[in-house]
Length: 143
Image (cartoon, rainbow, N blue to C red):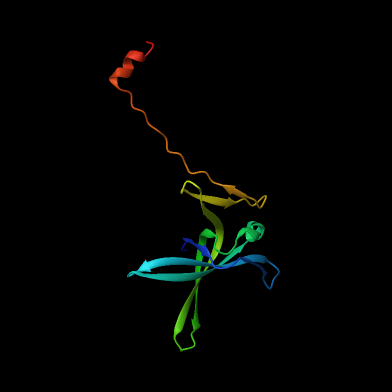
């Protein structure tokens, strides 16, 4: 099984939908930009996200929001108007992180919390600082 992370922006507000068997899920379209040969190419990917957490977070997923989608890709083919075969890529998401830029310019991710449906900012991980003792420090030791 293939697993991927997709970073992009929502092309429209997410939609809460109901399947034929009565299960609710969130549908959204995510755009990702690549620069290939000096040209900006936008790729659109359909994303489906099911479960209680998705339903609670649907109202927070607005057009233009930057997201990181974690999930499994699904591929299907279709017939284009000109007779060629096209490939449609979609993702069955199992997690979605919201990305925002703070005042300091650092990127912060916002995680959906399933129990409450609220947003929780993840603080950037702090790196441990290592301090080396020099021979001069040996004079300060109490023994």
